[in-house]
Each structure stands twice: as C-alpha cells, then as structure tokens.
Image (cartoon, rainbow, N blue to C red; front, top):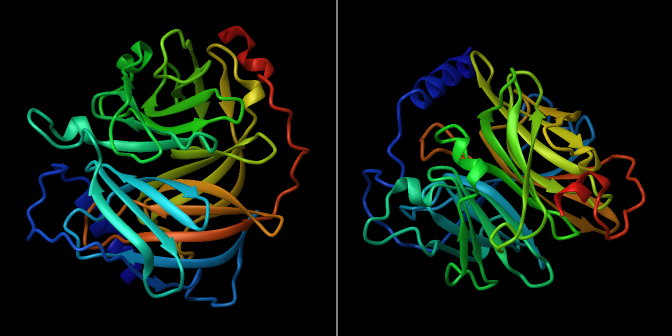
Length: 343
C-alpha cells in the first residue's frame, strides 16, 4: 500500500511542470558523490534475474552539489569510469573504486550550457554518444532539437547542427537516444510520436551528424505498448539494445529492454524491438533514462542509470547487469544494408 501511495505522489509531482535549470536551492559546489549499495529485490534478497539480465550490483548515487541529478544519459568509459549528462546541462563524471564513494568525481556545467541568452531549452541534454578511437562525444538536446559535438576533453563545443527533420519533432521530444555505430554512422531516437499510433520518429545519419554532407533518413521505432525509448547502445554483435521507460498508476516507473537489428532500417520503415527484460516493482527501478555496455571477463555488462528529476521522492540509481543472451558473431566493419541508400 505504501509503495502504491508513493507511486501516486511521484506521478502527481511529475504532472506539475518543472522549470529546469532554475531550481530553488542553496548553492553547493562540492565534487563529492556518495554510493550506497542496494538490493535488486528487497522482498526476495537472493533474486538475481530479470529476463536476460543477471543482476550484479546497484547503488544509489547522492551528492550535496546543487547541480547533481537529472542524469538523462550514460556513457561507460575505459577503466571503470562513467560520464553522464543531465537535463540541466550538467556533466557528471565518476569512477567505481568501492561501494562507498565515487572515484575522482566531477560535477560541472557543460560548455554552452550557461551564459548570456542561454536558457533551459538550450541546455536540456538527453543523450550521449562517443567515438572510442578519437574520444569525441556527441550530445543530443531536446529543447531546441540539436546535436553538439565535443572533443575528448569536453572543454568546448566544436560543432553543432539542428537537423531539419528534427525540427518537425514534437516540442520537448528531441534526441532522447543517440547511438554511434561501429561503422561511424549514427542513429537518433525521439520521444515524440510519429504519424501512426505508438510509433516514434527516428533518424539514421550516414556519418557524423555535425559534418557537412551527412544525410539523414527518417524511420520509426515502435516500443512496447505504453513505453518510450529513453536511451540506446550498440551490442558487440551489432544489434541495438534500447532502454524503454513507462510511468503509470499504480506501478509508478517500469522499464523494458528491447533488441533491434539496425540492418532492418529503411526509409520510413517501422522497427519493433524484441523484449528481453522487464524491470518493475518489487524489483529495483526508477525513472531509467541511461544505458551503456562494457566487456568484463568475456561477458557483456549492461549499465543503467536513472533520472531523479531533482525530486526528493526519486533516486539516482546506477545498476550493473550481466547480459545472458546468445550473441551473434560480431559483424564486420561495413555499412549495414539498411544504410546503403543514405550515401
């Protein structure tokens, strides 16, 4: 009963319009991030599985820093380090050295997030992609639909584009998920509906979206009923792993992971994912918005993070799973058939 009551309260609060980037608080610039270990299922402490996910660890991340929270996307880096971007234009970085504190954390405004004539719609970062070779980052924004490119240092903006097809996407429904494929192409998913019921607009870019001459081909993604895509990443075998989130009464937040084959992308095609895992109470779950994968001792590791919306009744959860899934042989570094028409 208490869980249901909390869910109703959270949903009621979420229904109240938020003014991102203008929260009322006492300013605090501490760089400390705390970690508190959590169970996957408090009602069954030994539970370890949800579909194709095997639970390994989970933490609640906390900080007294005024700008900590609202993490909307996650990127796993080498050496057990992570970087996340928030819908308040904040860059959050940390490593995992133990279960009590984050290693070498930092919390700072992203380049271009503050300044004269810069408002919330200019800094509402919702997605992140990275080139593992150059270290460059790309960040998607959903206020003024845009993609910005940053160097490995994240010290400046070194390119930006507002793709024309994105300007037809719904307001506040911009690039919720952004994936850089191994072959250098990009995929962007919106959080806004397409022309048909339960379809969400997406774009396939022939290369770096910021570079002149890169073409964008529209297609659609149909998530599980009632869900929206909040992030995505590419698995070692080339398939896309998409994080989908739903908020409802009385369950509150739930999440589903789906698999999509990028080879199926065609102009105006609709892709439907295969559900491989569901997170719902009493399992640990919140407003899940970020996903990334790494390799560890031959296993594919799935990391997920939640966006607490800067609300006291929500948490920033970091969750670690092993993916128990038959993996196809990794594809060669070539253009997928679905992208040939983009060149």
